Length: 416
Image (cartoon, rainbow, N blue to C red; front, side, top):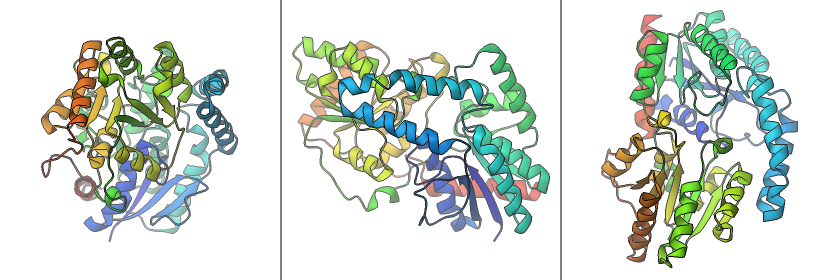
């Protein structure tokens, strides 16, 4: 079989949403005729994973991990403790966003390039596939493919220079755009997760980008078994992207329903993931801190179990109209939990139509929509309608993802 070098900064067992797409490719591409070797960053708990991985260490990562673990522990300990790490956490984010280029993963680049060149020198490979963000992985993919003369697919899970979550100033934004166009010029093909992003990338790079959606894997849930939702309880698993995503509209709606003595306000809300200080600050602002529970970063298995035990699942999108074409991977993961979804985002979001077409839940862009969504969710739970029923083929699955990439890999291989 042909051999693929898959370059991914995030990879299982890391619980980050960005690890899902490369994890599914490594798992299912062999079924479609491609052996996969994954070049990823070093994690202490990756031993025993059923994938062939080559790890590269990140400069300074061990120190940063210890700091973040301390901050996450403090955020989940108590309200008072949650306030203490906020300033230090913001300082850490500022330092990385200011000093690292092109992004926070820049410390991984030297070792990743070295490992990539080493393994492609010692073994035969037929193609390279890098999946970003962070954009550093595309720089690594470009260097390895150029040095070894291999066809290269640059896969975008999010935009690079047009990323609404980056928070760059004008000079840095121009530098990112220049670097992106320079690096991606070397790519044999460009893939991404949606048609709107594909159109943007096609315009930027002057050639067609192929959309291959994110996916869900039913097998992720097989060993968990069924689980009830005995309480009216919401669950969010994921990052708040340093405040670019916010639970403000949800908390405002709950606070308003409390004043109206509406039973839909009798909800418990669990957050699993980073940025707990941001969530705690907003909960206090709206007076709902008593129903908000933060658990910090947990394993993927714990996150899936929490989703199964909830009555409803939460998605928070950036409220800017410029992110209206953002669908992300969270909605695909949640579909496997078979729980209704409450999503919050901009008026014209593609998420609104996606949820409505599949009967997955509700979408809110303003306070009245948020309150009505909460009422509808409560009524559904009160009536005992706890499970979402999906039509076959309504959600793109992991094997579909691998099949689409296998076809694209065969195509670029024929061009080489």
